[in-house]
Amino acid sequence: MSVSHRSLDHTLPDDAWKDSFDKLLDPIPHLRELNILKRDVRASFNMDSSVENSNPNIVISSVPNQKSISLKPPDFQLCTSISTPCAKRVSAELFNCGISPIVTKLVSRKGSTAQQVVTKLPVTEEPPLPRKRVCFGNVPATPEQRRPSKKNSDQNRRNMSQSTNLEQHRRSKATSDQNGRESRSSLILQPGKWRKSLCHWRRTHAQEPARISGPKKSLPACPPASDCSVECVGVIFNVPGRRKSIYIKDEPIEQISHEQRLLAYCEQSEPLPFVDVYAATKMPNSCKIGEGVYGEVFKYTVKKRPKIDVVLKVIPIEGSLEINGEAQKTYEQMLPEIIISKEMCNLRTNKTNSTAGFVDIYKVCLVKGKYPAHLLELWEKYDDEKESENDHPEVFMDDQLFVVLELKFAGQDMSTFTFTNAEQSYYALQQIMLTLAVGEEAYQFEHRDLHWGNILIEPTTLKQLSYKLNGISLTVPTKGLRLTIIDYTLSRITFDTCCHYNDLSSDEELFAATGDYQYDIYRMMREELGNDWTKFSPKTNVMWLSYVTAKLIDGVKYRSINTKTHHTYMEKLKDLQTRMLTFESAAHCVKSLRKLVEVLT
Ligand SMILES: Nc1ncnc2c1ncn2[C@@H]1O[C@H](COP(=O)(O)OP(=O)(O)OP(=O)(O)O)[C@@H](O)[C@H]1O
Image (cartoon, rainbow, N blue to C red; front, side, top):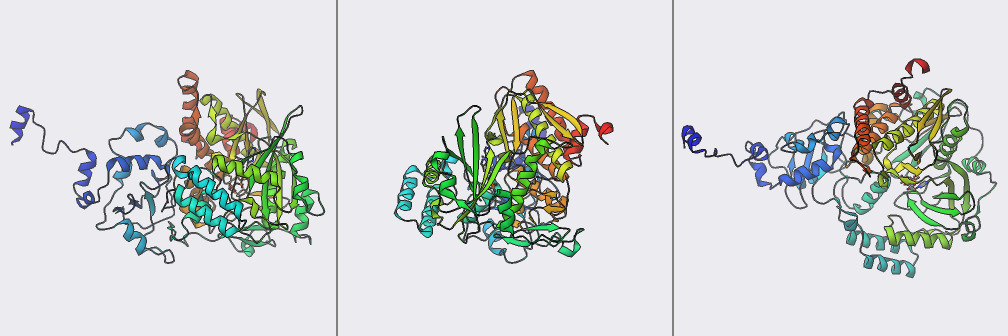
């Protein structure tokens, strides 16, 4: 049919049925054979924010046992590009485009399949073509799909009550995992608590070779002690799973053992009996409220006036029993978290730099012995209702030591919270920003893991909160909310001429993870720090502020979104996000936001 005829009878051109996806595949016909559904490509891409403009050297693996495509022969570099920030994620354009942007990154490579990629690249070898993998189809979809059935759960419980044997417990957990959770074959972690996700991933993929993206030696290792600007006479200790922490000091460490130092922080001379200190009678109205890889979190409420909600973070230490897939922390490894928790809390009363935004710690206690029976019951209740990923604490023996952090209850975490509107979240962000800024100025503080599970929110009747930044008083309207920062496991401070930090330089799995902008932040921090985790770079706080802002724009829940106020403040958040990564520190961001540059510098 000629062109003129077509125009007369309005017949469509031969390829009119094709959309942009089909046209894209025209010059690379073998991709059609792989039977990738456009719907899958678009949906998965949009779900996985970390892929948006991360390193485009991507292998797409389709549903299990199906073929996949390998993209762009890569000369992998450390991810210099990032996923989410702002404009792209916040604009609706991402979802309006005729085809997912991921497809525009496709450069075909004939004959590659996911299977081939995995078998060609054993983990022990330096991968010739390091890539990030994106899984379609086999990531656990819903909590229901991930959760074992009640029947399995009950069976597990029966098995557990028949034996306290750890191996049996593990087998029973493994069965439950197999029954209730779809396997994941790539390092795609759930947003939020990465350590739990990672440990869980490791435990459910024990037989699989881990796929690590990135060159193994692309960055300098943490400098040897002699290279540090201060004399490093501290302890270098290995945490299981390649994690290690270094504690440096510019003067000889006092001849006092870590056990003694920890006991001094607890104001104790020896460990106290667990069952007595935390007896049921001393913990009214108790329940388990959360868990981490290193411990269980309980709450009890003393209903006096004023009502007191106490949170207990119970962390087993010094034992040889592996728990939740990790070796237990030692005294040395526990100390930095205790020191940081106490010092950040003490900023409440600091004269020059003050904030109440770091979690309030009542006391720290070292206890010994089996888990009290009433706490075991609370653990089981939580497991029945929410399906714990942790090992049952009945495995602990008489000689087990635990550090118990007694914290003030600070509300629910941001990932589960519903804001009224963006005005409320805009000022919530300012609270986080100011608290980080105060921490930077007081102790060269970097949180380094400020995902939305580590930001707690509770209602307050206070109209505003007060801060001091370098001696200048600042206030923020609460809009009814008070925010608190928790979990200093990865944090860094300089205190008492010591730098306390966690060395992530060899934590390849963490840097390989995808699934959320959160996982880009770890790579961005690594690049910013040149993989030297001793270094103070408050820019890492800005990166987390960028992450939090992204969550406030495009992650958290809002109650009333059809109001002028909501739209106005949402625009403010978006505007701030476009500038966020230009700031050097949280303090810089605060000064800029408050137009205090001249006054404060
Ligand atoms: N002060 C608090 N108030 C209210 N809830 C809390 C408090 N501290 C901890 N939680 C709850 O317990 C959970 C686990 O606490 P936390 O993150 O400190 O544990 P963790 O063992 O350090 O976790 P991770 O696996 O990240 O190392 C939190 O996500 C939160 O839900």
